[in-house]
Amino acid sequence: MRNKGEKRRTHSGKDLFNRSILRITYGVALIFLGLMAYFIWFVQVESPNVIGNTYNPRVDLMAERVIRGKIKTADGVVLAETQRGEDGTETRSYPYGTLYAPVTGYSQKGKTGIESLANFYLLSSHVNILEQTTKELLGEKNTGDNVWLTIRHGIQAAASEALGDRKGAVIAMDPETGEILCMVSKPSFDPNTIQEDWEALTAEDNREGQLLNRAAQGSYPPGSTFKLVTVLEYIHEHPSDYQDFHFSCSGSYTDPEGNRIQCYGGEAHGEQDLFQAFANSCNGAFARIGEEISPQETAKLAEKLLFNQALPFDLPYTRSSYSLQEGDSLFLKEQTAIGQGKTTMSPLHNLLLTAAVANGGELMKPRLLSHLENAGGENFRTFSSEGAGRLLSEEDAGLLKKLMGLVVTEGTGSAFRGAPYGAYAKTGSAEYESGGERKTHAWCNAIGEGDGKQLAVCVIVEDGKSGGSTAAPVARAVLDAWWAGEENHGEDTNL
Image 1: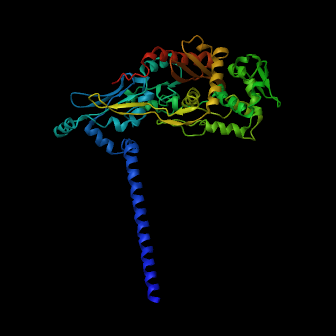
Image 2: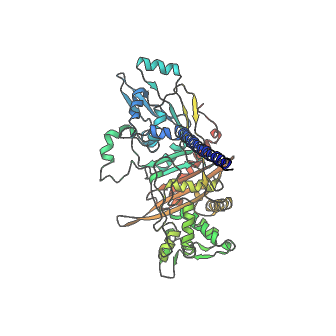
Image 3: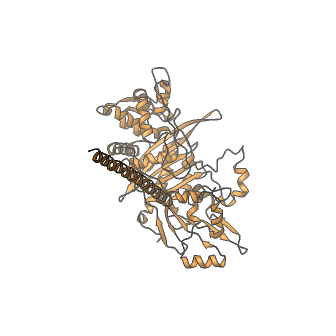
């Protein structure tokens, strides 16, 4: 009996040992598979960013073997190319100078814009292997790949012309695909002369900010465009009776503490329900709404709508800020409700919110890269659209779009009346102080739709006074250019 028991214990020990070996084997296998998965992900997703980083010394080696490729618009216009002199000297040329500088960036004094984002692609070459090998053996450079953007030249030019010599930004996006169709920032700089102009552009007394891409990096009080957030929060807190809201506007509103809120230009809107107050951008009505809604709940909604959050954008940008708290003064609550106070927003963020409204609440990741082609004109990689999450319920998006429609038909968006496409808008006039003087930035968010297509636009004109009279016509010009080229939408004119 003792011997049999000892044999059973021996077999049991072996089983435990075998199971331990299996666990270790499985563990090692899982770690190996994990490393393989990470390696594949790194090669496919992260390697271009790491390898193409301007601080990576390997980039210099790539530049010694490859002539930097071209940057082109979606309609084939060359925005950047490398020209070679008879002595082999290479010069990066930007045919449109200041017009596309916020998009292309520059490739000297470091790299910015697309020159930075697509650095790896521009210094890679996908010409046929025989040609590559031949040139390598002869000590000649191969020609780099071309990067095609989603920007459309006609829309970019129309936006720039409409903005004119005024400071500000215009940015437009297809809400369904995330394609950026124009991105204008003024004042701008000339990337052709960045070396010569660098000292002046970066001087301490330079207050023009030419190197700042205002479309993505600008930070402004949103003014009445923020009423999209305020009205939505009010509706959320009054789901059954928001249509009973009523306010009598005499041109200004004095709150219970004696603070005075004035409508733009002192205009008296008269008797207003919620929809009329939004369409007419009545500050008095929205100041009173600001007294009623919960600061905590409004903060939650603002953060859901990407305030204080990272934006899904690949170029440098400035985060928007919302900071109202329960203990803040009544006046600050009122100011925040009308888009003043401490709240700041970038045109890019305002565009994303507008695009989400247009797209039924779903946000697509904004993108500038369309596809890559080799020097022979062959398309070998296409960048696909990506979802960036749901900002709004479909019901909320539909309601906000309805309100923006009333802005056009009944309110401050008269610049869009008579358009040959469906138009929706929200204007804004955001006050700020400069040198002890009160000034106003002009905002306009707009949506154009027709023939199953849409375009979302955001415009800001610095020191532009009224959004309806200054920014809205700029947005209208962009939508008109988009509509005029509607027959080209959906066509790939590059292949």
